[in-house]
Length: 226
Length: 164
Image (cartoon, rainbow over all chains, first blue to last red; front, top):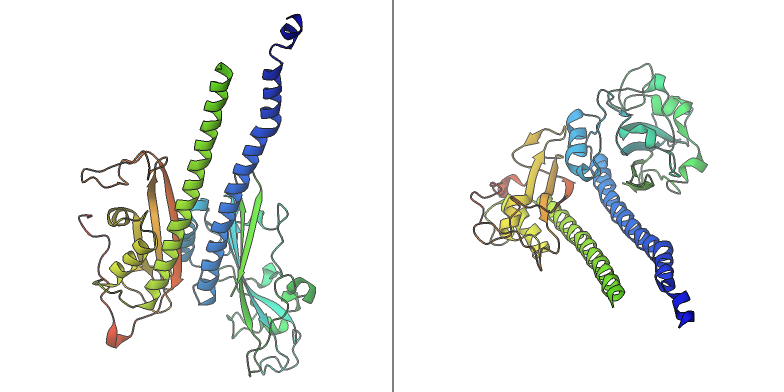
């Protein structure tokens, strides 16, 4: 009898310990993982959609298309627009979409003619929509390649030299060494960027990356190539 | 006995919560798939059998892809079909190299909607209007193309008024 009185309440304490230190964290972990998985799937769908649109010529440097992106396509991510920065991205919100256009300069390309960037992959165009500060953070990879500020057309996101023309007329992709992407960096995207079949003009790849920080502040990164 | 009641109630609550969360995710996945298929159908410029025009074809594809969620009434209230030109300006019909977006906006979700708490309108249908549950939003987009001039379907209008 006295022995049992000493043990009263001990099962309650054990229950609190087990539930508080094991079951409740486990349930929260499962819920968080489930939501992250769901968000990740949403982001995959979004970057796939944007990528195929970008590859087929939809111009995401225009305000109207950026509004379509932030207001409809990425509405569930509460994505913020760029404001006055057409292609360089804003600084608010918890999401960024980076659109990049890479071009392989074929040494047989008649426009190249032993140019500086012959046999190199170059970054031809970059548009950032959303919070640019998220790019490369939280363990996510940084976008490959850069266009120097001095050569960036801040309206279209294209690389331009002094001729001030847009690709394919501009010679930027042929002559500006700063837009070259090293093989080791480009291999993080794809193994090779072949020339057009049977032609001597290099191939182009359209690459879209999505960066999203969830409610727990964790980064979710997805990308798509067209 | 008292402890058993408390613990059982707590566990049942957790199971109920998990059940609902799973249902939300399932509903969202189904609606997303419906939007994807509808957007794909939109760019073909082909009419589905029994549909009078392109917008009704798109709506039918979405409804058929998620019939347990997108009833004719709910599709009417939540399904949006929009066309844009290449610059992102809204247009009334698909244009070459434009964009078509199909979205389900503010889809009403109340806890375990299909089983228990059904929000019904005056016609007895589940209704988006006045729902107090969480809203689900999904969208899908595709690059559109101009239809064959010799066989160009009517674009039609969406949603029907009044909703069925």
